[in-house]
Length: 328
Image 1 (cartoon, rainbow, N blue to C red):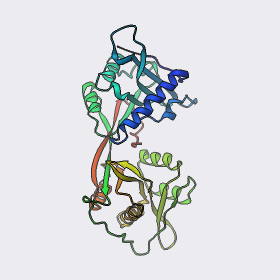
Image 2: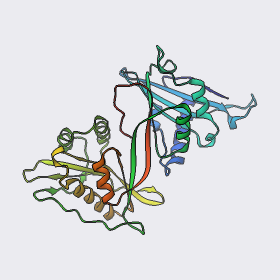
Image 3: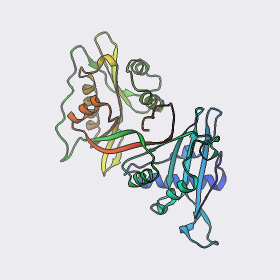
Image 4: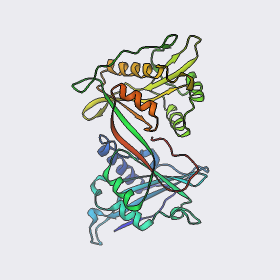
């Protein structure tokens, strides 16, 4: 029913077909927030420090049983394997071929054995991880069927800023001796970033995510400082409109405090400041994702009127000393 073969790189018509597939799937899944694959990943190749492997999955058009019907790419799997053998998997099925058993059949045929001398399916991966974005029922069914556990979770929270579901929003109350800066364009070399991240005592997976994403720049950042000018924390957010549930939405990407500034109201003031800037930019819905094990962050967000919308799960096969990554 399906055929597949690992490629170190994709080229020609196969490359074009996979890019079209991941683009179509991303547009189809955009509002639901399900997993997607950036077209840039489809062009990746290994760089000597990690292995990159591409798996186009083909079947006859419309899953026809007739041998004269042409083969088309119905799904795509992207795999990176680091120097320690940890494989990161992303997989997407074309919308026209979902709920037809493609991924289940792939797992049944390939298996999930990572203990062999060459790792999973001879790729060198001795452990596999994959994020399932949002509460997609297919990921739940698949992981339950094959006994794949979740090793980390993230929540997406939403806060209505206008409309009938919007609760009143307080103005920021800044602790004595603390000032908030006006938002500025984020740049990778912003002087406050390294200092706050160094003193924040974040879990490695969260620090890695923020560090990776900060290099993209192009968003707004505001920080809090004490009377001596020391930076106590920053909030990183956007006022660019996205469509979410037919509303104009914008995310708060991160709120990071130095360990010494926690519990003093600095984080609440920074987050409220970001929300008011989003209101001024005509944003109707603010989104934020957090680690549900961070009880302080969960409590603060609940008090500010955030509601849980989605759960994202990181599933793992095999053993790895590396801690679970933060959701990207």
